[in-house]
Structure formats: structure tokens, C-alpha cells
Image 1 (spheres, rainbow, N blue to C red):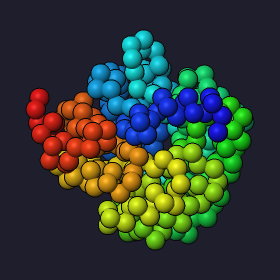
Image 2: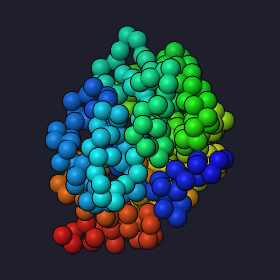
Image 3: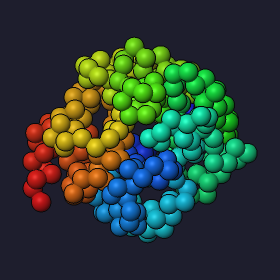
Image 4: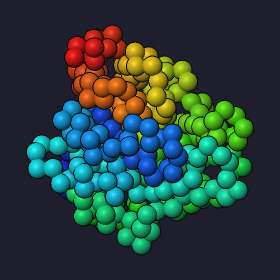
Length: 279
């Protein structure tokens, strides 16, 4: 790992821990994901004031973060777009890089601390899986050349007709091999689903052999989210990547403060809820 690579990771991780707030949901072309993000400029301003470790966005919104002169969270830039999150099943499933010829050029121009890409495993959809592997190969080559940390998001998706279309699964026996594959492909950071049984998540961390962040998924009841966050940190997670569980709550900045207390100070879910309710 190069010195520049470590510099970027140090911007992302504070003493090895990270809260990355994801507001890159506009790329999914799904209306439900935009609830709470309609005025993304205001959301961004609120999040910058709350000071999570990082904010994850797409290229077209990154200027809202990087044009700010004050101390601000690190930028994590998404590099791919696909149709895996739409409510209806598609005849053709696909995932492509924004810029396949120069896949991290935008990240370098916007001074990102890391880039993120999906690794979808969807039943009966081998084509999208192959596309994801090809995307990662292109990114890995560019990331090595320019010392950019690569975050891979391995997602075990549900079969069509099982709950929400292409919802992700928490089956540890399926998550662990896919996380291991992501590491084999060169992940510097893993962003993985929580396991159905939180006490199994240490197996995901062991398979990753690199900093492992937990993705949040759909909005949940806040006290349960905070309790689960504390439990996942106890299993060895390096932090969280939460989106809807931040920006779809009535006071996103206080949710950030509550999560930061868990991730960086070892607060319990109960203590974190009191922080949220304090203001």
C-alpha cells in the first residue's frame, strides 16, 4: 500500500472507524429512495454541519460537498449505476461504470478519499454478476495506478418474487463467500449487509481481512437501528454506511451524532438514543 493510499484512508477513517453517510440514492432511478433527499443541497449542508467521517455521493452532486471551504467530511464517490434497486423486475439486469475508460478520473478531480462499486449476486442473473466483476477489474487497475482506496459492496440479492424486488439478504452462509470474493478481487474496504443473526457478523469481518463497514438498507425504527449498530461494532465492524436511516429521519444531524457516539466512543444503543433525544 502506497503512502498516498494510506493518506486517503486516514481521511476516511478516524482511528480506524468510520461513519459514511450515503446520499447517492438518486442514481437508482427509484422514487422511494428520494424521500428526504428532494432538497439535496439542504441535506448536504445539514450533514456537513453534523460532521460524519464521510459522505457518499455521485459525481453530479459531489460539488455540494467539495465546494465547501470549512472542515468537512471525506468524499466517497460512487462509480457505477445499474437497475438492481427498482421495484419492478427487469427483463435485462445491468451494472455499468460511469466512465469505463477512465473510471476514477472524476474521483481524482473531486479529491475523493475512496471510490465505491457494487458486486451484485442475483439469482438467475449471471450477466450482471459478470459485469460487476469486469467493473471491479477496471477500477482495481486504476485505483492501484493512482493510489485510490477501493470500496466494494458485495450484495446477496433475493430471488424475484421474494419480498421487495431484489432486496438484499442477511444469510451469513451466502454473504461470507461473496465478501471473500470481493477481497480476492482487491477490495481495500468492504461494505456488507448485516447478518440476520448479528452475532455471526464477525465471520464477515474475518472473510474481508480489511476494514468492514455495514450498510443500512431501508429506514428502520431508530432505537432498533442504534442497538443493532452497537452490536455490529462489537462484532468487529469498522463502522457504518447509512443513508435512509439518516436522511429519512426527522433530525438527520442528531442521528449522525448518535451514530458517531457508538462508532467512535463505544456508546450503547440506549446512550446513543439519549444523545438523539437531547436536542
